[in-house]
Length: 330
Image (tube, rainbow, N blue to C red; front, side, top):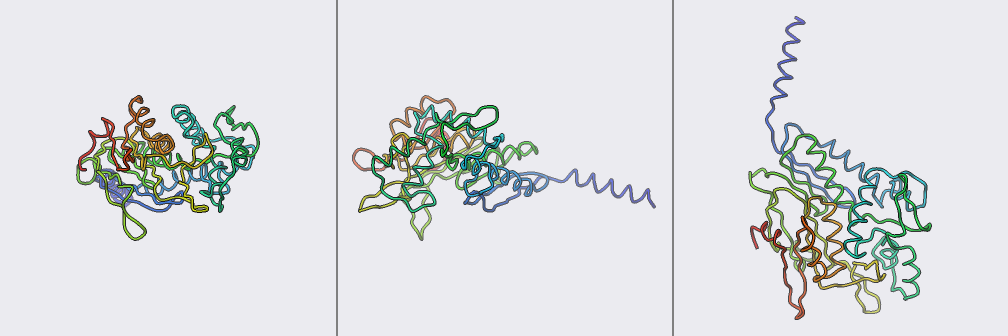
């Protein structure tokens, strides 16, 4: 009898081991937005995906008072983890290449101008100058596993790069589990590999920044086919504040301290990692079209779709060579 039970158990185990791959879909809320993961595997990885996202949240979330980032922003002495270290390294790299247009210390300006949790106000030049004393990546250093600040009160806002890291971390998990076909999206930031359930490359839409409204979804400007890589988009066309009849866009130039409304309406950036794409998409909103175009054309592996307003007030779309090669519908 025992021999029969053993044979049955072994048989079931072998059957489970031979289970055919299928596509799974999971979604939910994270980082104040939604996530979607679709992948082909022999078994669901829902809980492992949730654990990865929870680790990113516990490291980099500004909305989690117990996160490492929140503790560092309260000037607590805490060792940084590998996730924070990777974000810091990428942020420093993009900061340098963008001439300071991307800066994770911009939090005091974001809050003061009303694009954070507070109400905000129109600031005087003196007030802006006082806040700029707490802004700038040159005021931060990673040393012996700790974040060293030039002065207390300097705060880090990873909002423009943490979603990208979260996408990359889920992608890394899937690849460690042998998954060859997947698509991971968090709040519009995407990383994909292989083929979709239609056995074609993953089709990803780039939205028209001027379409849609409160009751209508945005229209698709163009569609690209992604076989491997990441895409992140940043826009400056809906989030704004008004004071005394003046409108201020939500993009803050960390070098000057003021909100800016450049000619770029949206920047969609393709790169090998979503964290890198996420950071550059934010930087391009500060830099404007010509400067962003020059950077893309000089950076191997970086591609972009920039939707901008030309000198006559018309909306134009510029595609880098590699980006255009991915377009399947305009």
